[in-house]
Length: 76
Image (cartoon, rainbow, N blue to C red; front, side):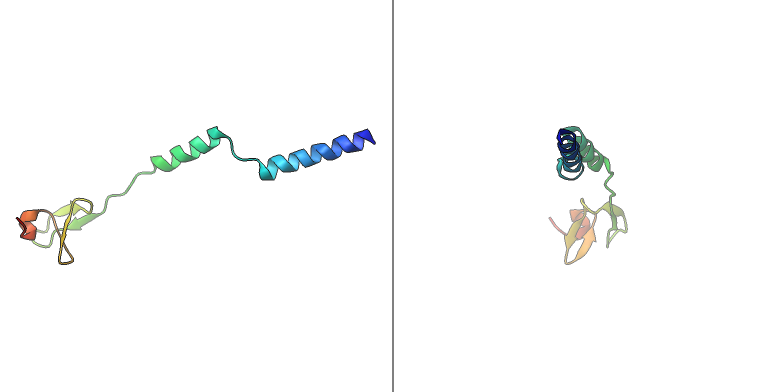
């Protein structure tokens, strides 16, 4: 009878570990590091005036068009 109870407890423990246990801190840190290492692609946009390519992050938008500088956009 005691042996059956121990086997049942062991089975329940294995099920708990398999389905309900949270990942350890080491696994969580590794997952975060892998996500951060993914390179960010830079999209290049062509200037409407001088046809120079500039990063989308650095481009100036005026009237829905992309420009490489304030000079090309006609701004001060």
